Length: 305
Image 1 (cartoon, rainbow, N blue to C red):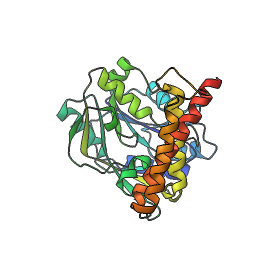
Image 2: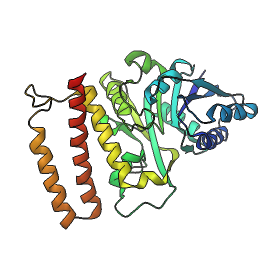
Image 3: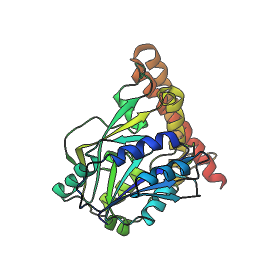
Image 4: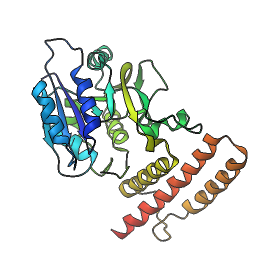
């Protein structure tokens, strides 16, 4: 089979139904062999029934169940239970444009690339507040900074899973997603996409951004609140500290001493920004404090294991 599309889902049955419908509307050549694999990551809602109902109209659709909680577990299950030479990933709150499949496949071939990402536009459920500028779009898995094609050369350019593709032979070479990374239920611990593309580049494979490979990512109202951003940064930094730790042998309660003055400086910079800087800059400095607090929490938990 040429192509497998993997959609991992957790407790978003209504949104998933719209994603399935958008995938059903894809305009692809009749000769293309492709499948869509929905991986239910232990959802407590009616996800299975939604997929069963859609299968009555669209036999190309497949259902898989992954009991182990975590996005990386679900993605790995989808990879292992699919058969496409090329694997495209999208999410259960995403609406791909009707030419997404053909455009993405064409871009991979045009660039002779092994992996790719693409443009992710926001669909705002609620008008974003004035402080939520494009500098924060990464927290929302939104990518609108460029519309051209370019080669991905650094892990910090890694695409988001809402619009991402990898050839199977790449995964056979470097391995699957790190199950210590990635969202687990309601815990917003990301980093699995960056880790994957870091390994892809290190192994010498070619990755590209395809500007006209486009999807639309629904941004729920609660995700434009500062509470969400604080939680995302704190939990992601905690997870990163648990997985990778921090350099330096000296420790105070499991924490490298250099983190404490860095945290204090970050607090000072935030206080200054609250008085003199634009709202987005002030909040960005607050987010840095959340990063340090999450890192310290993760390091302490790591010591206790």
